[in-house]
Image (cartoon, rainbow, N blue to C red; front, side, top):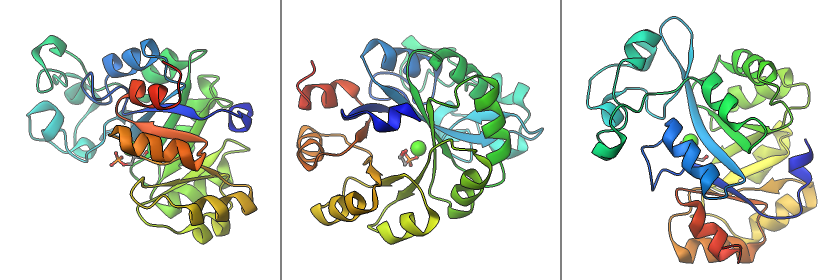
Length: 239
Ligand code: G3P
Ligand code: CA
């Protein structure tokens, strides 16, 4: 859990460097590394046969242009789709990755914030994390309180964070998470104070403008999730 004790603000690339490359693809994660991000954020779901795949939506439609529900498709079907062309033809042939692939790329390079988009996959995700030797370099997050609670119960010390659209630090305390992830839209001095007295770290999402980046930095947050890591590095004076 050493990364949680870092005394500098962590720059976390949202769905990889998703302003520069198709979200949640190996290209987006590799570019995040090149751009000096401290971490990457990604979204996890499960295929029909139970493989962990990295995709935000419940369907493959938006990122691939092909209709299909992730949970009803086999890994082979999912892997057969082009997840890059819709963003830019330069990325034609990018695939929807497995969690295992991304963990392998990230190992020894940067942190991984794994957002559980569905409940019931906690033990499988934790097993994948441990299997990849990444247990000291991940943060498990979710909007789903059942998934947060199950991750804490099964995580054996792997840090877990609660995502919230609104301000609800009490819920974070009740669940016992060490990290609270509010929307940048609701980030406030009150949240910072309430988290500070509880010893909870604050990582807002998703920062997309210089103004939001500056505001988050001024609040003294512990990390910032952003589509463009260079925006945050610049606000932190690291460029
Ligand atoms: O990590 C926070 C952020 O990723 C949550 O929103 O919709 O981009 O998954 P979303
Ligand atoms: Ca996410």
